[in-house]
Length: 280
Image (cartoon, rainbow, N blue to C red; front, side):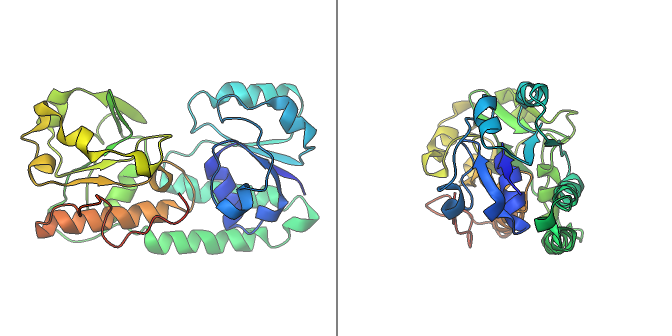
């Protein structure tokens, strides 16, 4: 069985199912698990995958995802070459569970895939244990997740981020927007003032996240998150990839929610308390 993954999330799903050894190529952005992907041929960035490189790897299955804006063109070019494809497009955490199961079902088509569905159910069960929504009547802090700083882009209604926040007992101030993500003006941040801001800039390593860029926004000076020094760094890998690593994102949100409810500022390094970065 020869697998090629074109997105980080699918690479991570394959790994979670125990089939990383069957990967023969990945996109340029796949970085986890580091020891596995470091040895694999790269087929290009997720938006400009080289179909000839993919075809040359003679894959039995190519895994793509429309959660990457613009990936439709990549999918079309691979379909035109008759390559065997599995395309995911999750919006919710439940969709992620379904995709883990879907990948396993496709792997069952190959002799090496025996037991894949049982593995998938274990992965999903582990995720469900971590991603059960918080209960209770405590105030739900407003946590703004920032996908990009200029313009400020945040998740809207159609994002699994909302469920991760609910798991932590928090809310997305912009969950009412009927979009996956949306740019916002400074006035909108003032109208829906967050108690904490989470930097998770897409395509940028967490080491390059700069909380100072948020604190320097003069228009935001009265926002509670800035007044209380609650701007955090959370790897986009923990929040932006629909894979089992969303569990790490939920843990980060839980830590931040506790800070808000207990009146603490962010730590000096702006990382959520108790969160280790691992391979990011």
